[in-house]
Length: 165
Image (cartoon, rainbow, N blue to C red; front, side, top):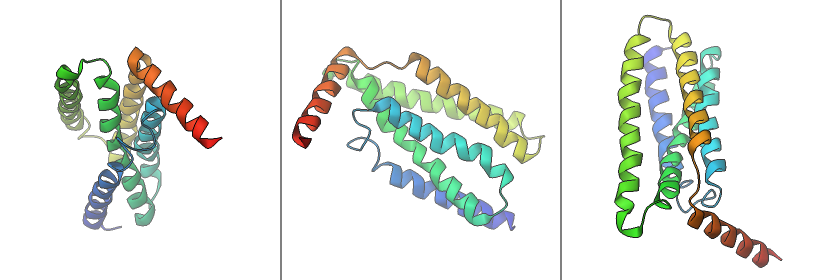
């Protein structure tokens, strides 16, 4: 397998996944099921992270990288979750928290990447997958919908149920 071609196709398919994920984020299917949406997005990121090292098919790896790109839908879901904790005039703070977390994640990823530079790439995929899994666990321990969101979500679900009958 040509490493240069693999890199190009992997990055391109990941980017296409990022683009497609914007259609699954805000205004999408997970607006009232935020934690389910985050779980799905994390699965798109983490499961391929553990599978990529064991596959040698370029086609399969490109598909996995596309799925990993879908994780960006978490940005919209995090924004929805956080905005419920802020008054309408302070919602810029919720976006600042989300973007700040992305910056911290990028900084941590750079440090981790440097530390993993001396081991085989397959092992680095497993280690970063474990770190991702840890992040998901932390999210599910601490993430809570605001009381106003909870009642809004219940109202929306009730309206959907009534319109379906």
